[in-house]
Image (spheres, rainbow, N blue to C red):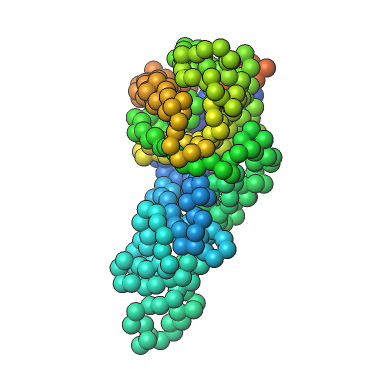
Length: 379
Ligand code: FES
Ligand SMILES: [Fe+2]
């Protein structure tokens, strides 16, 4: 059953929204508070966009697999002899899920009636099928899903017709590699997770502007030179760049830092890729809706070694104990505010310099949201 929006709902949502951010009001808060919009987003956003699975280091050996849930659709990626493939994690006999979590397996054996599939998804054996008519094991195969490797990260897309991630992101991969030339050699070192009582879009909105930084993140502003902060929007991503301050700061020590850039890329719809000042590092930060009022946030750190060094442990502590609580308090307050009848929409505070204080990347995100919602409009 498709989740649809009437023309009236769509018009209400975008009333006051203008393609020019300096003239525009934000989209209406109903899409942050009404559960129906999450149903629309599942179909029009999460099932049509490139979704993060893992770093390719998890899929180096034949048989390595990782399962992922994309808003209720279970998918797994697996290393076959020479490539990584992805499939719906669903058995062709009676729809039992095939794999759990992550690991390594020579064959995919369904836990229900033990049908056996090869790693390439083809059915190898169906127990007691020899008495069946019109049943050809060689004709049965798991349903495959599009998969792409981007900057050593594995992404999947449930939409067979979606443009490739590379096509949609132009030279983003090259830009990331320029900032993180060591990215192929980094390894998973730490993960932070959070449950936030706010709509996932409120979490993304907050991430996309640093207008709030001097007010809410004093220590962060002592780490980053806000005068150098630039935000640029592109088709399905935005880049958020600044230099680290050289003098002492209140966030964490960057005395021995080989990386002096704060380089962040938001990639539609729910992931940010980042490189922070410090030793060689890269981070993948995802925002998953749990309900219209709850977001599950997962924050992976990839470092030069699988154990963070002292400075990195300090940086992780800063993110976990200072920066994140500051942001989580902000977005949870926003969600409570949106529940009241006293707020419907606000303005984007933008400047022509594309500075870090400007909110044009929030406007960009909302344009992408409207484009997706439009697909759900009844004719
Ligand atoms: S559901 Fe998989 S073997 Fe029966
Ligand atoms: Fe923030």
